[in-house]
Image 1 (cartoon, rainbow, N blue to C red):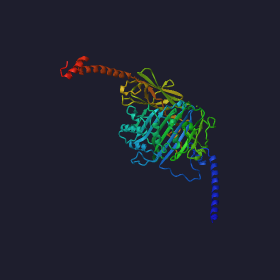
Image 2: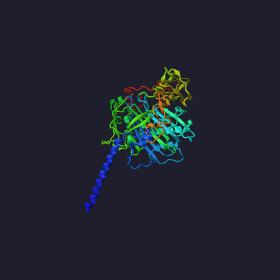
Image 3: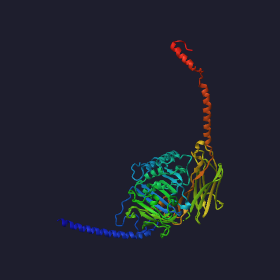
Image 4: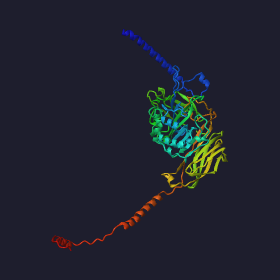
Length: 613
């Protein structure tokens, strides 16, 4: 009886194994033919004729995927060999939630979206929030354009909802709360370093907001970024630093780099192409540039382990998409650098007006890790000039007057395009606007739009916005003179001789694109190529930051008060002390002590009972 039951079972198992082997063989053949990952750049008839499977999509035989959940989390890492030979790594963590923060309904249940930020958005009626902490300056001439630019130090700009009545009071409370969340010095943001731009900073999310009274912008160029800022930033991630791409965020390596920038962007986005409903998007970005010279490594080899001291072992379990992109645009035939392990998945995306090719590693697929169950990569490289970049410096001598020079370079060979220049200068540098000059190729370049808000001492800084037309292949110089103010002795920093920082100028522009842009926003589009909204096919939006300025102010000799205090205390102690002793001391006349013979005689007389001598 046992044999009669076991024999059919063994036959069924054998048939099942044969079927599994056939399915594996078919899957391997399909995997060999799959070479390109479909992106939004491919034309529609190519999709209709033969649609290649997307990276991370199930095979055709699998059942269709379930409808998307109410919240979604994606993570990406882009590794780009720079023209200078350094390595640029950009992390993108995107959380989209269908909750309505701007409505009357209260949001109470949080799953992937961090509760701390959700409560801040609800309490202060925030429409958009953009905050960045940057250590170092992005060198555009050597590295090209970053995916998400940010100035050195801390930058914060917020769009409030139109229901806010006291914008300045809400802004002050919001900076104090964010200072506690990110362990930063944002509580030092006040009216003296806050401006209200009129044209430069438009909402990056949906909505057509034209009332700039609900916008506030401030920078702290002296802010130092360290581990205490990175730790709360990582805690906002659904997986923290336990799984996924966030395991690479090791502070010892990140802060031992040439450039490091971490940012948080919150904005409303569309749920569907028709934008019938909206969602709230939280995008956490971290950009870092590793310098091979300072790290002591060789110039021709790089790996994930050399950059981060760790390798990837798994994707975040809560992420619907987890990918690593390696820029191989300058390496079409593998002549410039070798990428190991090789991946058959390739994708193309238009980034900053240029069509780039990327090798894709899908961490949700176990085949990406290989037999070692870890992912490590080797890199190499090439050198280009960006279309738009800028410089700024202080000229002059002495501690009374000076000049601020801003140079804006347009390296496009035949196209001119307009740019918006925003400069926020502290009040203690008194600008002479009548000395403002703009020149290009040795000729005057008259701005088509100027907005200037003068400063008030100890209340608000200068605000200067200009719309300039940059001629092709030219350098536009903006110069303005200023006079240094003498501060009160209590307003100086603990190290006044180090100087005072002036925040970076902001240049916003629509740069002509060399390829046609895709204005349709799709779910399969890489995160790093879809932050700034694109509404024109012939140009793309770019924001460039200049260097922060370090200006010396007239500084008193702070050792003189110390010397005066010491001298005064010495005079008081010696003079008043002597006079006090003379007035309060009592004097008594002491009789000379008798001799030894007299003392002996008095002892004998005391025993005999006779009077003493």
